[in-house]
Amino acid sequence: MRVAGKRVHVVGSSSVGEGGTGTLGKTLEPALRALGASAVSFDAKSGRGLAGDAGNRLAGTAAQRQAFAEALATAKPDVVLVVLGGNPSGSDAQLTEALHFVSTAVAATRAKLLWLGPPVYRDPTAMAVTEQYERLAPPVLGATYRSSLPYTDPTAGRTTDGVHFTAAGAYTWARGILHELDAAGGHPLRWLLVGAAAAAGAGALLLRQRGRRVSS
Image (cartoon, rainbow, N blue to C red; front, side, top):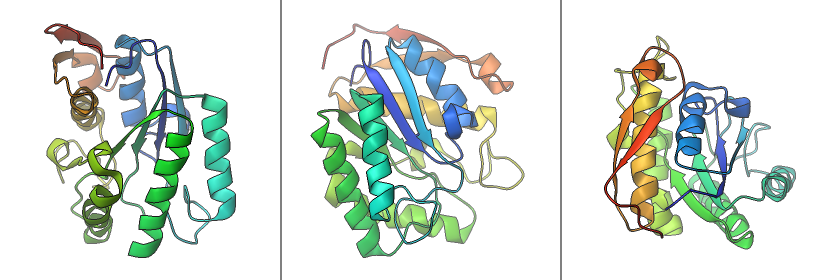
């Protein structure tokens, strides 16, 4: 999925961070811009889940769904990248309904959707949410859903709370997300991310494409 010349809207929770200030957000934004994205916007809040009745959800209530639709209208994205963490997200039925809503809302804007599932956790409660996504999201989202499990580790690259990511952990996760963006377009590319600065805590990445660019 080429992002060159495209407006990318990233939806997430604390790893993305409000305004892209989380370790993953600070890693993804320069990477997406290096790939040629014309704009990168963020809709992220700490502790945000997808569904359920709590106040901090993306699409649990009518008001939250309206706010999501309004954020899409403001961003005018060509690509929507969803990367939510393992925050509580309601029952199976509520999560499934919210997945349908977000997919339909994005499709109505004619943007392309790529949804990265929550990462792996050592905490059983958070991991149960990841497993809930892994069960329920693929039947709803099909190929637009990709697992984050191959790109995250329960201990390595995590802060002392075991939940959030260090700069190095976010770098590894971001590299996996970029791989999935390529694969989603049906044109897997090999990217070299030169990120000593990212591993040291900075967000800037230099990306070099290996192989010929192919439009999707």
